Image 1: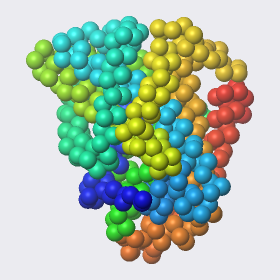
Image 2 (image 1 turned 60 degrees about the vertical axis):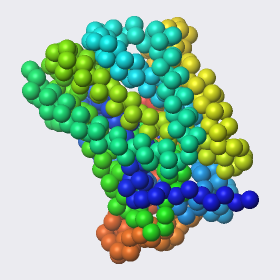
Image 3 (image 1 turned 90 degrees about the vertical axis):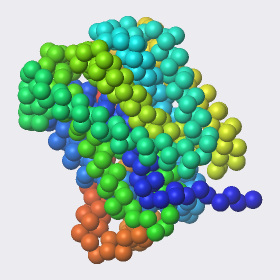
Image 4 (image 1 turned 180 degrees about the vertical axis):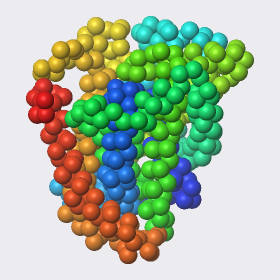
Length: 461
Ligand code: TRP
């Protein structure tokens, strides 16, 4: 029996869900510390370049593939009669599982911060390192997060994703706007703004480039077919071109806002910009404390609560990958697929959970060739899944779309819902980016990443 596929009930529902997938810890937790690590504005510029030149064209391509095939990433290539490309779908499921495994741990930290600040514990910022080694507490929050995600996914796409993201996204943006404006009034704020917005070209190197690339893909949920799944639920008459633009702009805008909020704070507190995964966790509580107990608890707890929700709309989209694979391809019942995935992913996440100081083995998990220091498990998974697999996935998707499926057919799919597309400059721009820039840039950066990061071969030093 063929089940009728759920569809998004409105255009806004689709945009909210796709933006909900895109906007998450990637924008608010990861983006600022990557900017800090990458030396500020230099990273920001490269990041913006990748978002508009590579990511936007790929984003609408993924959605178009999904809508054309009406399948999850594994089934879609078969449905389009190119079964040899099914490996992209498997890569997608693998990436979804790997990313969600560590993402869920960080989401647990965020939720833990909500609880701590609600209890008035502003010292949590200074005690971040100890907090993340308290495995029973942090592990409990992660588990809770996974259970909530699984519950929502098991309810089905329209009910769960759409309703949740519709209400929560605008509230989050409002509170971030408030915090950025507040941050600008702090002492030394301008130093932070300068660091963030005035590029220092000497900071630019190949590592900054591939980190910015991985970050742009991760932040837009790209390169592994997550948006193929979303596209598969989209109606023919919907306009992919402008919906995709709205999703890209809001995701980039929110990341940008997060930077504008964090760097003045980091500078006003005299913290190290290269604070790594702890950057927002260490710097924000002090700000809430300064607002006084009542306002501080209110704004602080609300911020971390909303950040938990932003993370939730992303964990939902990540969970959807293994689940829709099991449901569509393996004919597993949705509820069962959800709970199997949740259990397996939680287990795979345990090394990330305990690899932040609690377990010596996973904290100093691997030393890459030529590296001085060992890398912890979570960073290793990030390097692998995010900085390596996502761009390579993007590489194959761009090749598939223009050279195998063919540009003509891709463009026809994109033009449903936007009749003017075929004759517009956007079509030329997207075509050029996909056909030439994406394969070349992604191919080169991929080779360099693998050589540099994992094998310590420095081509440019
Ligand atoms: N984009 C999300 C973020 O920025 C993370 C995410 C959700 C994701 N779904 C994805 C990343 C699919 C890659 C692929 O937080």
